[in-house]
Image 1 (cartoon, helix red, strand yellow):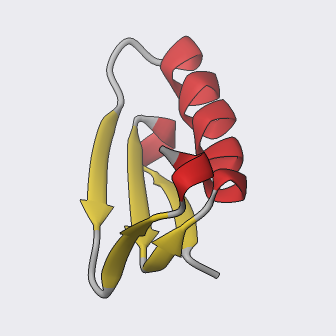
Image 2 (tube, one colour):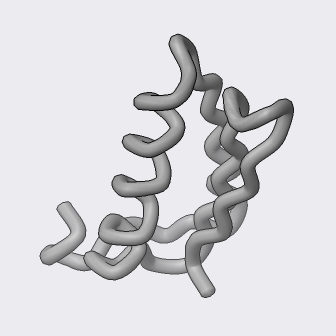
Length: 61
């Protein structure tokens, strides 16, 4: 699985681990989760861990 999303600190911190090649399905998974948290909290801190990340498929850009 190229993307893992972990919510912490009551929802205002999002840790995202991305590896491999990101696909459109990863984008479709991430955006609603981020928008949900952004709607619930005034600020959302996001940490992107891009260890072993190799880029995006064309459809994901």
